[in-house]
Image (cartoon, rainbow, N blue to C red; front, side):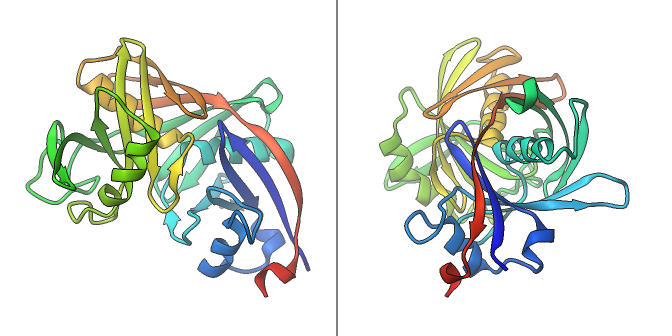
Length: 280
């Protein structure tokens, strides 16, 4: 039978939701790459595979990148998945739990699905948790050499790894130039998401994003969370931070223990069925 799909975007970061009950089997990496391809498939920045309802009654979500690899966590993906659960009438406007490979989050849908808040968990800068090779340490204001140029970075995890490059000016071109090299730098054993960050004022930062397994991305919730946590950790920003990206703005609140609360919009694009011809 044709595979049902639902497509949403969160500030231009688009995902396809596939329900395991509709798929009937595990997705193969080749199927994932085909579905996400923007010429030969539907096109997306990834696939949200769920829900699987756990014995505890929580929703379990698996997240796949366009290259077929599996991601631990995605902030925009979690907001989109929350909106999908709302559209399917599986949740109401009260908090609920989603389990990911990167840990548990608490989500809440507002305004009939138009905005979603996600309690993303705690950010850590510990090299052992991210992970980053070398002695145990908080990875702050270190130097990475890329194509002969020295860049200052901080590393963090919120269930998935991030490398935040500190810059006076940022651009899409720099993300394309350095992002793929930093993503696969050997100091990051699990590869890494990359953010190029500019401090604007106490309440605003700007980032350009190179996403692990996906490439250049208009917006990212986990990237916003990591970048905001770095800005707060370094003392450049207060606890309420607007993270401005090419796709739009996410509001992040950083608690004293570096727990992250994120709120941002979600838009439904389409739903339909994937023809078996695509996989032939």
